Image (tube, rainbow, N blue to C red; front, top):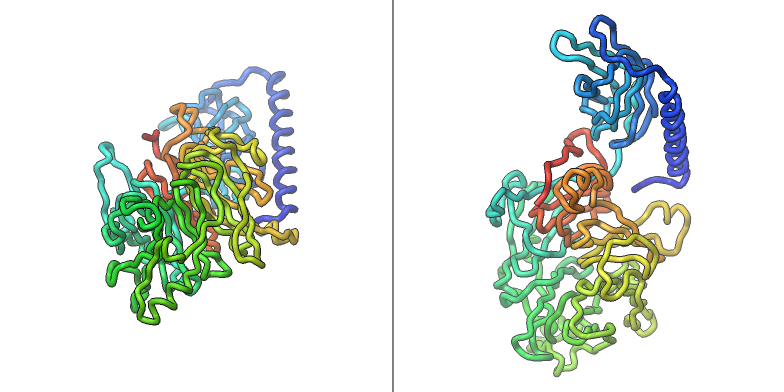
Length: 504
């Protein structure tokens, strides 16, 4: 992700040269003499390979002598990692560069048992690390009865409900997951432990839908979906104060700060942090509330009345129709927010009026109403299928170019089993998932494989997404996969490309 336009151009030129080289060799091979079988009485020789540098899963051509014509007798390793062989002829072969080939030695072994001979290339392949999908924690057994288990990442389980993820603003190692229909879990990335510090019962037992924090980090806000107390009085948003030891637990209990009904999401304005925005499924309303009034009231010793009849919030606008499930995601500058309409498969943008301190009526930025599909494109030509949550990520290239808006928006596109990327202009592309190699094996766009973002990796119903800017790591709640997946730069300390077989 962290690259310049110059490096992108160099990479594109390298790819074009490789394609030309391969095409030339393909043409040459057509007029060569027929490929000869391996002769164990003769040495195996590796004379050259192309390209000399690159990343995992790209094609490499290896030149030499006495490779034979039976790929079952040939073994190729690059950097000590086994390469997938595409085709073998007596004097050249095509392979895919394996993930994690960091040291770059190219070795070819032909034959079996006492007839096997190995040759090394004189040159070293310059392996270039890339972003890959990995698995942090979680598993799904054959019967899917592993349940919910706190503890070390090596044995922890759960992650089975739709959910949102958010980092604790005062502890970059703490990542919270709030589940629709389950408790709130905490991933301690430093200790590599999973715990359940907050329980659904503390929030009335209602459906938990979103999580946010005040700028000072002292309060957590959780939205809930409930309508059993009537319109205007059912709980919508709870507020919870941080404990003295820095934790958030059920101790003391959360309090209702806003009440209407059927709230799918709530977010604080990132700059004017006293402004709380929440919605209702009822008519697609978006409400604005000044939470400073809450603190003024409780600090004065008075009882807080969080409901509409008390005039503690106002309705700003509605989105097009009734019964539309949607969430609100604030741009880091506060200049605008995205409204992700989950069950109607599109995204709205609402711009912030800094004078009036409120968001304006929204408009469609990407996708199309009631048109679920997987299509990369610009604006309304793009298609989603239950986009569930998203996160803004600073793009270094935009910063280098001096753009006004330097953030892309990454989306957990649930039923497309992918992570999508949307530019500030509304251009949508597929960032990760739907790995082509896995589809060839089982014909599914979903799966469990880790590895190259588009060639190998697959997800199964991803819903939550968070981003660690300091370490350039995405965290993905892979709901049906029952895992927390990562998207990060390959590391020589860990295995990052081993694909699991099949999917669910």
